[in-house]
Image (cartoon, rainbow, N blue to C red; front, side, top):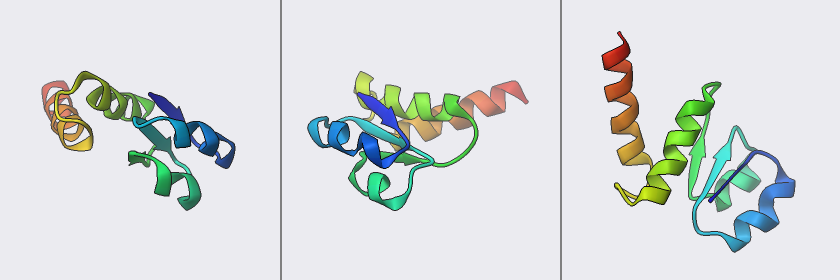
Length: 74
């Protein structure tokens, strides 16, 4: 699994199936498995964990986790 935000991460993303683009331009976002936008890197981490742990293979599970965590913190 890799996280990245610049075009120089493209070759790495090309070799891996589980990738998270973090505030990347469209070149990298287009080849990433998921694309995170925002300032909270914990959100990007959770997206990556969702890809790794098989708990849903990506953003849907991570989004549910984020909503649950935020509701619990409120």
